[in-house]
Length: 271
Length: 108
Image (cartoon, rainbow over all chains, first blue to last red):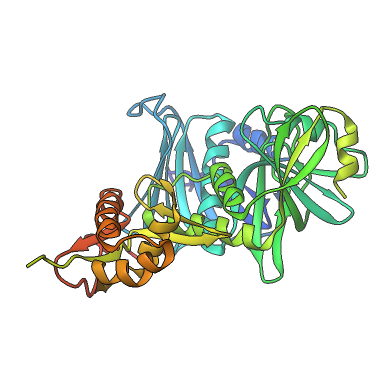
């Protein structure tokens, strides 16, 4: 005789960004479809995930819908909150839970935050920059909104693989830095390719009357890089890690100012 | 008799020399500062056990060819300014173990 209580089997999807698989469990098949669509190209068949989150969908009656993001570490857990989500994550166990409304923006924000926290411990970071692979090398194009990230992405030649037009994923490895594609999009609204390559250079974008590349002093490079690193945690240790990661990066990777006019010839300088 | 002043680097600060410039970042509020050459010398020499007047005499007067009294006045003002921003600790006693009020939990 069947029991009165029915166990609901969760649906599950593994999203691997930057080579880091994260399993998301939900009981909502519609939301599962949304996740498959939203992260197409980054859905992995890998069963061995290091990180796993249970999603609980529904209205957040207690929350201020307009509340800004808050990331705090308390008693072994990261607490991630915004107007449309509240998440807890215990990194020692690799497990967490997310309460959110059924929109893709909330899970997108949680994934970005989790990746920044994991990357910070490894000397990497997420960066407000477009990035692309050309001739087996990755190039990053950083700048604030309006600096030209989307424009340089649109102008990319057919032999370039676009990793993102908005948020680059930079991982530190023994031999240097590797840039990975991300599904985090800007105005181009096109997912990056799930590919990776060693970082050859970081270009700080500026629009001007001609295409040119100029050197950037190390301290200026550090300041501008830090201004574009995504960081959310209100936590001294993590702030220091992000600072050291940015300083390490500019000490090892060439940083240039790329001034460009909006036409495809600028890519003749990127080789 | 003039009291001695001791200065120590705050453990709440991360610092790094990039090229010719010293960048320091406060863990509180993620504020980034760039130190000028004098502040950089002061920061580097601020070991908590060397009195400020010795730092001025050995490191600043020799570097900038400035009179000792003038350099001392400027260094005291600078140290006070850096302390206000939480970059340096100041004491009339040697600062042997500059600890932060809140010890951080190690995160896995």
